[in-house]
Length: 258
Ligand SMILES: [Fe+2]
Ligand SMILES: [Fe+2]
Image (cartoon, rainbow, N blue to C red; front, side, top):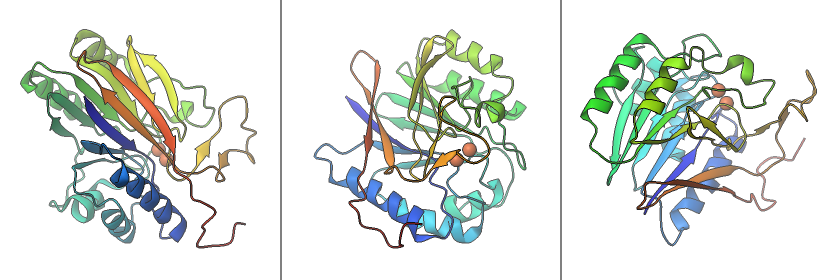
């Protein structure tokens, strides 16, 4: 069994609140009797791409197991690279491949600089084709920030992944791909994409309502719920099973609630 934890939309914003919520989730994962093999963080790591916000993220996301990082629409590719990954400055897409035992995780940068919506750049499509060609004959998870299909979210569905058909063809056409993981929607969501499971990880920072609960423009984001994390199990049949856990803040707040 492989256990992959997923955090998303941490939105580090230089306030203690969002940092403490991530610290609680990381402590929860560190204390599990059977610890995850890998931690995936699927974008909107910072709220506005500032170097100081990435410094917060670098500290709070430290772990002694691999932590794999993906940008979202709130991130800045160049600062993400220099401050979080320790790489030279570049605004090229941040795509990465990670091997976890027999599992391959392909993380695709769906962000578009300056835009809230997502799109896979031509070079990302080419990178994905090469990565699949080189991947071993084991299960593959594809992770990207923007959901490639609607998720009944009036806020997110209008800024989801554009032109998803090419990705759908890849997902449907490769029997090794066992699922697609996303962030962006700030809600735990299970659906399908191209005939495979598509799981959207909750945010550690807040919850975005669905069509049945959002009342634009005032009632959109709920900051009351505790932070949450997704725990993906990949078993010996290469089936993806996902549990979601909220991590109680325990009434312990650094700032009085508003
Ligand atoms: Fe977000
Ligand atoms: Fe986002």
